[in-house]
Length: 272
Image (cartoon, rainbow, N blue to C red):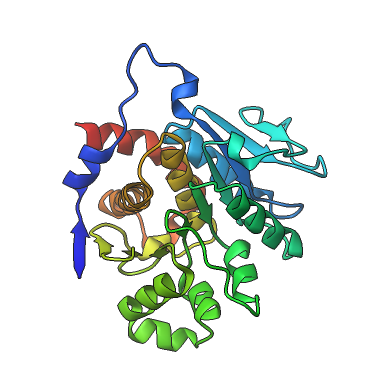
């Protein structure tokens, strides 16, 4: 069953920050993303989480290489004792491929962390496992077609021929929520597939998926239900791309940094 996720539904789901609330109400969002040469992915993810309302954004930096002087908004964490201390965890964008990612995933499962977003290299690492790692039903995977093809061990052409069937297969295989980015974007749960009504091909650019991962994480940090967080972030993400085109810009010209600049005005417009 496919259900459409509309802008009206997104407006009802958007969290409200009351005047007396403080930063603890936004939660502490842990970002495990970025590495030397790929810090942009981590920065896009972290900033997007802040922009949608996370109270704290902590970047995991075990080797103390994160350019914190240029990005003082973020906290840096060099060692993690318990992942369960954080409201949510985003893992994968801009990381180097390593067994460390799988160790983190297994630890998150052991600690029963429920609010987790896996993207990019985290998905690729899962695809390389000989034995399928069943993920909690509240976790969210955000693959593009190539990553989904690797996860399902099929060709990209097969994914493109039936994207709906592919996202349903991935959900059944992994056990969690799967967001298949593209045209259209599908969000598959055990019982339902949501289709976002927003978005266009201007999002086909490096870094835009990192922004989406950060937005989902930022909403999870505010204790929004996982399915709602995935659908809401996807809808807003697409709205920003749609407004980019409506303002007369070319599909080829959008960059991830343009999305970050548009988050505040998009949140304002959807509230109105």
